[in-house]
Length: 125
Image (cartoon, rainbow, N blue to C red; front, side, top):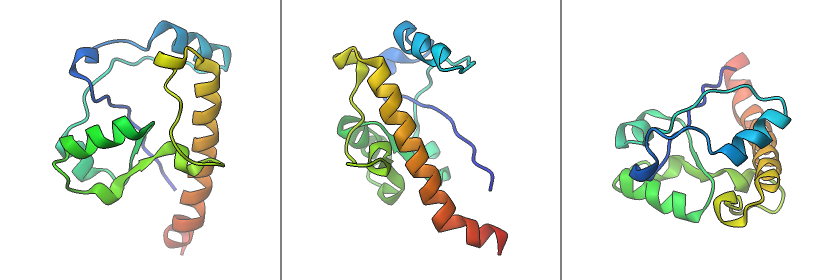
């Protein structure tokens, strides 16, 4: 199974911005090597993706607005794939970038399990 992941934002004011320094620090501490500049999610992105994963209810509403209500079945909260579900706490407000990292990691593990259980038979069979 091949998975292609891209990252997009919903706020024009952040377009072109690098990874926020406190977030970058947490990622580096966990061994991630990265380069990223923020770009905006588009209606075309939503239409062409299999899934659009968002961190919280605000992002969810923003993506649905951008997509003009189309393809809403593709839009999911990453946190819904982790135990307890729900929003990923936004570290911009909580200032707890480590907790956000852990919640995102849990969501990604749950997402990987979901993809494996729901799509691996279709791919290998």
